[in-house]
Length: 402
Ligand code: HEM
Image (tube, rainbow, N blue to C red; front, side, top):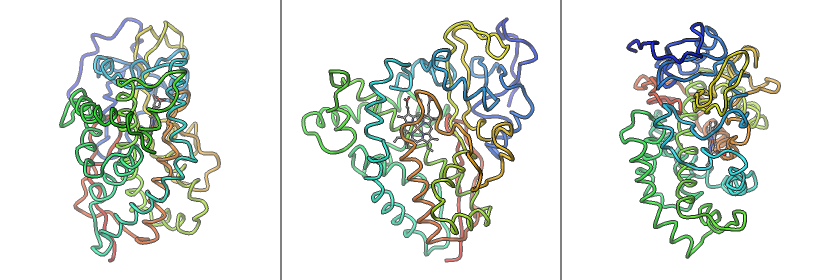
């Protein structure tokens, strides 16, 4: 990483809190995304300032990060993507709206993503998982990223909103392009492409509603009115961004860990009833979303002066892996009592899709381990990671005895 000048640092930032870190590429992230955050956390104050990405704070302490994330009265969601000049253009809902305006949109999302609604998708998730695993099981190897992780979440998203499976490839590309700073396609182009694709579909669903989430959101009462076309586009696009790339990459982090840890695989197989708790421990260990908040007013925050308009990066991974939050945090321990983490955020914007994400991961593990109990990392893997809002593994290949 080329060095960068600290000369533009705002006057209110003390020099002992200056750290040259690119939140999309923390030092060592190419080898291990989570170790990179752990090392940065261990070496620095809980809140530091970096000149990268137009200059902003980074909450590295687990509890400090969680506080910034959930305290919407001091830290706004108006801009949640860095650099700020790009984040200003994001404009998706409800992520960029604060309470109380945020609440009606959340009611809509919660109604459609609550556990009872997601249980209705379990059969679809299971059938898709089995179909994908069986398509390569006899080969004794697979490109897990391409043949499983990249396929399952988009197919479930399409089933959720009632879109045809034949559109999966282009929609997946748009979703990925909206979560990487150096994508094949810039954020605004990918968002526009998805808007153009969805616009006629939304109009048609208003006229001919089905049972899918899109139809239900369009028909729902939003404080005495219906969603406008623009709102429907921004809300559906947010669900796509939030619900696809996250699961794709989380699955890869989990399978990489399990490929390396026979004991962890055995523990999962021996205790199927413990799967929900085990899944939660995996989310604690492998948080992967890095977003931001905007400081609303000048404040003193843990002895540091923050100015209105300052941006604070919130790498959600740092909460679960902070040794002051969870003992021996880099160890995967399925018997851990009350693991604490922010993989799904906290506060008013806490992920409404977590039930779906947890189901996709738990069902994957059940069906995979029942068919391929032992597996290891294959040499054609590329375990490097690309910068982005969502941590990722470039290519995980697995092998086993067929
Ligand atoms: C590994 C899987 C996932 C992770 C780690 C994850 C993580 C997160 C995080 C950290 C936030 C909070 C953003 C903030 O505080 O500003 C969030 C919000 C959100 N997530 Fe998830 N998510 C996952 C899967 C999903 C899925 C499957 C869906 C839906 C199908 C979804 C839909 C959303 C939406 C719509 C929001 C915005 C909520 C709001 O602003 O009120 N997510 N997610």
